Image 1 (tube, protein in one colour):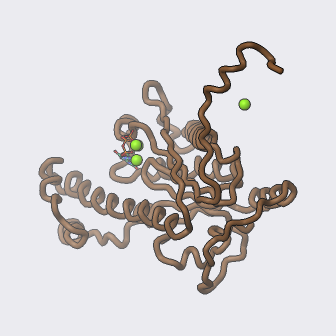
Image 2 (cartoon, helix red, strand yellow):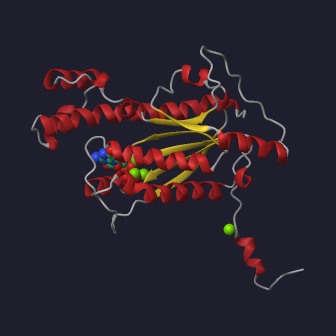
Image 3 (tube, protein in one colour):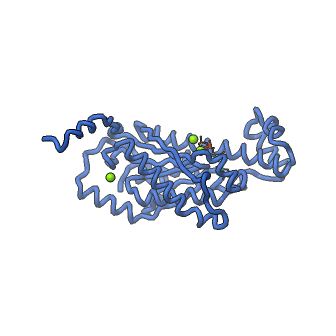
Length: 278
Ligand code: DGT
Ligand code: MG
Ligand code: MG
Ligand code: MG
Ligand code: MG
């Protein structure tokens, strides 16, 4: 029985369900933030207000979506991670990505004036974000993904810190500084910073060097290493089980940390992040 003769158009919709039992990473990235950061006068190379605003918006996303188990942010991007047992929106790609992107953007704009009280947002420079979902087959590869983003953060920050010291404090032209940095390795940049500007890169803020990791805090951190076993495909949880887990996750504080997530220690001390329990 058809409700109307127009209903056949529904058949044009394409399925976009993401593979079951895989990690889902939704990465969002600011659109045209190079221009936007210039327009609103973001401090170079790192604007603490801008990063804190990104983190504040991401914390709200974590609070609204208890299925998220961890998130990592750097510069104008954030990666949000769903556990393989996540069933939100039947794992539909479009639903997951658009919900995260729009919730994040809404909070970014809502909270803007809290972090930039003297710089009101004005068209055409309104912040917007793109987003995509990628699935990863196991926790090992998921961790390699997270490590990739954090290594990127480190490489870019060391480069940008050195570059902007050479330009802003060393009086070099942009092209001149760029040319000198071409082909240099990390040790060279550390040396430029130290010898010319008396800056020890190790003393830069952790938030700049390591980016930001968000996760739920349950006050059950393990003091020493315990091995986390690879997740097993699990039986589907019942509705009431799912509700209970959601409640627990909602109650948990969202921790905002600037720590190494490449080595095992971070994960060993917080086994619930990869186990998905709770
Ligand atoms: P896109 O993502 O292709 O639309 O283009 P952009 O311009 O957003 O490029 P992207 O995402 O590769 O690079 C991020 C830009 O945002 C980069 O040009 C520097 C800027 N940005 C991000 N965080 C800060 C900050 O804390 N301070 C300053 N001055 N700029 C920042
Ligand atoms: Mg981009
Ligand atoms: Mg961008
Ligand atoms: Mg970016
Ligand atoms: Mg609706």
